[in-house]
Image 1: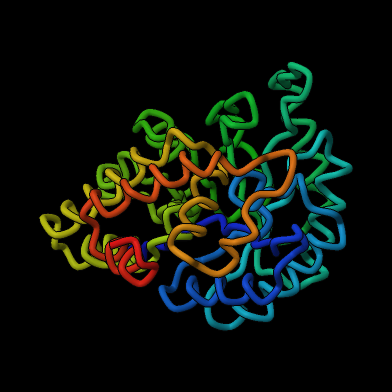
Image 2: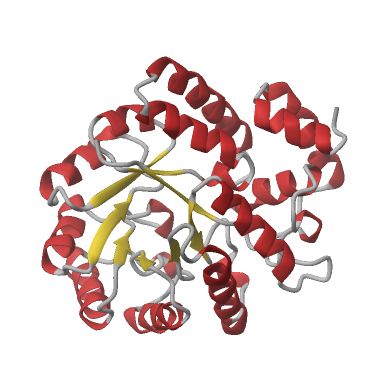
Length: 310
């Protein structure tokens, strides 16, 4: 069985005055290094990428490479884009900063836009014929549509720089199985947490889990137990992770992560979210905090005790 990689979109840390908090970012990235979790910098969700300036995005790439390079792979996400020209510009910036791989989605579904198959193929052809660099494709439904597995597979066959596909947001077996049958075995397939035990058994080679921003040791423990063949132990940790996942799903995107970072006093937690997003009201944050110890997850309990929640 090939080694299972863990990948996660990291949160972008801000100061109380909403500037990029570089020191907190370094501390956050070090937690990924310590648990050997591959980091995707500047994601549209966890990373609030579309609230960042060009210079901030460049700085995040630079700091990510500084902290992680040679210890764990450091990958680049890019903000949501309207067209291939924008995707190419952001990818070139990431490559100049010496990341190891760049992740591409399709164009964002702005103003109800949903590309036809031909339009999506044309977009990927323009991007991938220009960017000759190790690449990940992500048919993420949060873009407003889900590209057909065949389109993604065709891009994998056509462009040798495509090394992996991230199936974040696609928690059922059906898409994974169809794609697995269409791509070459050397293409890494990373799957989301929900249903991951089944998909890892079926041949997935990676786990995408943004819970790593808060409880990276638990995520690492899950994969280590699975790789060791301790399915009972892995199942127990998987249940813990899924319980946490269900608890936070009410607060989509970066909201729950920033609440957890604040109440658990993790690096950058005081900075919260950047507009257009707002932190939930204080009473809601308090209820969120009170529920965390009740989940019964050892690493979460340890963080809660250190933050004075017990």
